[in-house]
Image 1 (tube, one colour):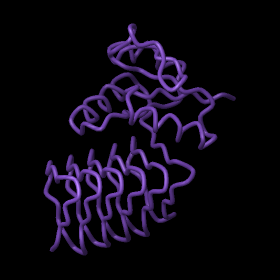
Image 2 (cartoon, rainbow, N blue to C red):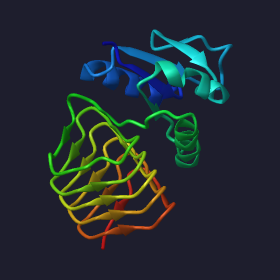
Image 3 (cartoon, helix red, strand yellow):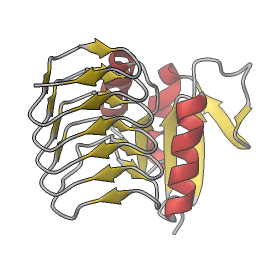
Image 4 (spheres, rainbow, N blue to C red):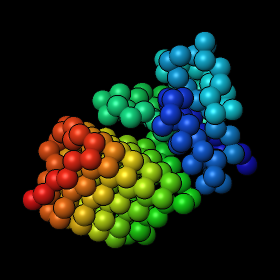
Length: 191
């Protein structure tokens, strides 16, 4: 049987999620849904088949969907659209990422290449754990949060819902990042 994945968003993050999905071996058919359609017909060599408004018409032939956009608010809106269309919101994990067996990923999360999610970490709904990120033991990542490339999160850190830690940030032990915070690239956070 051929599993079909719909990826909402055919930009840079969407392409990285598509590659991760294909490499995982779980998804044999990957299609993009993007509001630039019909002008945009292809991304990463894969077809763009609809805009977001047309999502419900694709539901019968798809086995899951993920919202692949870096903007946390837009990702939340698109996740709601996925569920309203009757589609299952699925997580994608790059095969060269490590996620501890004790971790339950929130639906719709993306864990990218060379990321590490440690023992007893808690990962919320529709999060982005980007390439080369460490989310260490007992850390908490809130719903719709986004960890940029190379972010390093120590054990016990709490990252609030919709927070965005840009590339290269690091958070020392027991730091609390508030909901909806936007932390500049390279920032070091201390308790």
